[in-house]
Amino acid sequence: MSFPNHRPRRLRTTPAMRRLTAENRLAPADLILPAFIREGLTEPSPISSMPGVVQHTTESLKRAAAEAVELGVGGIMLFGVPAVRDAQGTASLDPDGVLNKAIRDVKAEVGDDLVIMGDVCLDEFTDHGHCGVLDSQGYVDNDATLEIYGRMAVAQADAGAHVLGPSGMMDGQIAVIRQALEESGHKNTAVLAYAAKYASAFYGPFREAVDSQLKGDRRTYQMDAANRREAILEVELDLEEGADMVMVKPAMSYLDILADVAAMSPVPVSAYQISGEYAMIEAAAANGWIDRRGAITESVLGIKRAGADTVLTYWASELAGWLKES
Ligand code: PBG
Image (cartoon, rainbow, N blue to C red; front, side, top):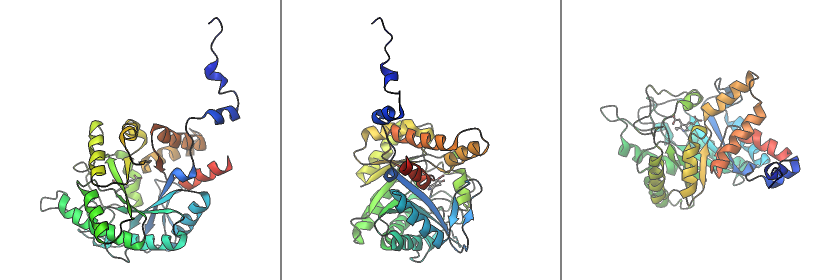
């Protein structure tokens, strides 16, 4: 060819041409809004390391859920912050405990118009902040924890959750939860397995969001950032145990993992754009160093392009609003 080949640029000439030829698109229905509710609050309480995100009261949570429905957001993932904690995380099992009550309140507000998800994990409820109960050596006791997860799952399903999100990375958690759901008559309650969840420094702001009591780290149960192949093992085990959907978490530093999982998973794949990812972009934007809307949109689109069917992001409602207007 004697002429330069302008095929790549020809499809970029106008906004309409770029829109027509885009390989991936974001839609509000792909987005899941993680939300925090704290027991005993009278006003929503800002989370300083996550500007724009709050710990909700019952009323403000119900408003946020109604707004998410209005904007076409796909789901909401609820995290509860109890007033009282103990070594066993007992408040997680109380039908009137903060999280179970929040699920019931949100269900009463939005019914089946939004997929309501509950976090099945003990870290918000234990006074030591670990995702499970401890043995006499202070090691997280996998099997004793499973027994509690099964009961938590039933409590959340009783409250009306459509989907349960076990995030504690205990071995066998999906099987135990599935069995507990079947035995309690919740055959249609789905499980979104936090399958490949890595121990990450980027969870920092979440610890503030749930007033976590954790000292130390979660490296004996969450995955090591060095490992790629192991994510496939985690996903395969969760699928065998009955996971309806699987998740990769965090998202932005783990896009290779997400692409691997998307290539092999026969069920929908989620990715969680976590608190530290949110905080980084908000902080840079607040300093005027990056364009906020552009960076948010690009970051979530990149997660989608890597293979996520759904994305948990604290920007879910705001981003859905932008998508609706464009
Ligand atoms: C555990 C849980 C965590 C997050 C979601 N579920 C914290 C952790 O594993 O340390 C983090 C989410 C985020 O950082 O946005 N219940």
